[in-house]
Amino acid sequence: MAAIHIIVGSVMGTALEVAQAIQQVFHQAGHQVRVNADFRKGQLEENPEEVILICTSNTGMGDLPLNIAPFYEHLKNDYPRIAGRRYGVINLGDSSYPNFAQAGKTLDDAMADLGAKRIGEPLVLDAIYNNDPGAEARTWAEDWCQQL
Image (cartoon, rainbow, N blue to C red; front, side, top):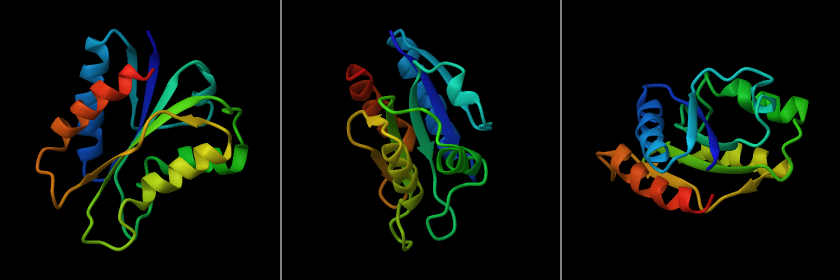
């Protein structure tokens, strides 16, 4: 079974709630999971075999939430050795805003630039059309963990 590190970017708490909902799915499938809403430099290196799952909302004009900005800065400034490392993306946004879901796209691009290998397609949860993002994320997570 896999070890999964869910790195969360959340402003209002919805992305954290989604991460906790899918954590249960992964536990039930026998995976080890840690949810991290307070990323610090060096945490990617703690277990290089961990699969990274980014679960982030957007703020402002598609900006990163403050609590995931250190993760992005680490990727862009320190060039951690993550080539070949597997990852996924869950992106929460609101399509009534310009730059819809840009934070997740920014992080996805940063991971790919360093040679990480995305598993499956990102899940984009649109607040306009989804009243229960946790339910949709759980369904996605069931399929996603089959690809691990």
